[in-house]
Amino acid sequence: MAYAEMAAVGLLVGALHALARIKSPAPPLIAMVGLGGMLITATWWSTL
Image 1 (tube, rainbow, N blue to C red):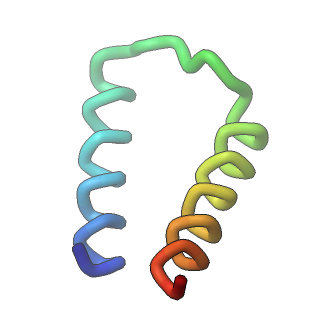
Image 2: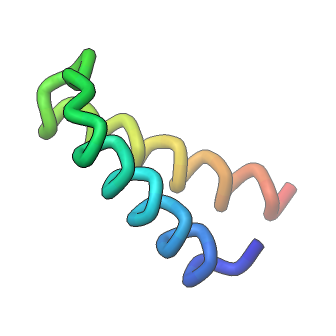
Image 3: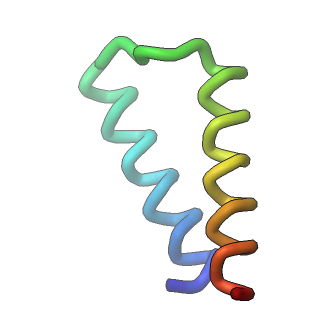
């Protein structure tokens, strides 16, 4: 999947999450650091 598609899906899921008023299990900063780590790892892993 291209990065633009992944970003669009992430925004859609985030919007649905907000509309459903689901409490996040992690504070936003920690969640963003975790997502960044997943992106970096996925990019690194695909180069192997």
